Image (cartoon, rainbow, N blue to C red; front, side, top):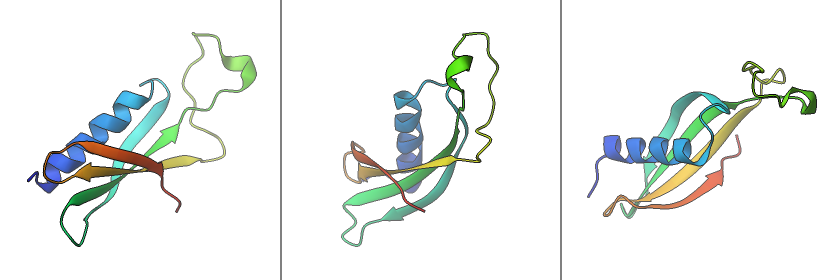
Length: 93
C-alpha cells in the first residue's frame, strides 16, 4: 500500500510527463482523497497553461501567463496497492 506522499508524487510526476515543461507553470497540489474502500487515491493537480496566440509560435517568444487567468485542473486516479496511475480526467471546479 502506498502512502499519501507517494500518491501525490506519482500524480505530480505523471502530469509533468504528459506536458511540455515549457507549456505549464505553477504546478501545485489542490486536493487528495482516498476512496472509501481504500483501493484508490484521487489526487487533483492544477497548473497555469501557457498562452500563446497563433502569431507567437516562434521558439524565442517568452512565457506569458494566460491573460484570461485560465487554470487547468487534473484529477489523477492511482491504485493504492501498486501505485499505478489508472486514469487522468479534467477536474471541473
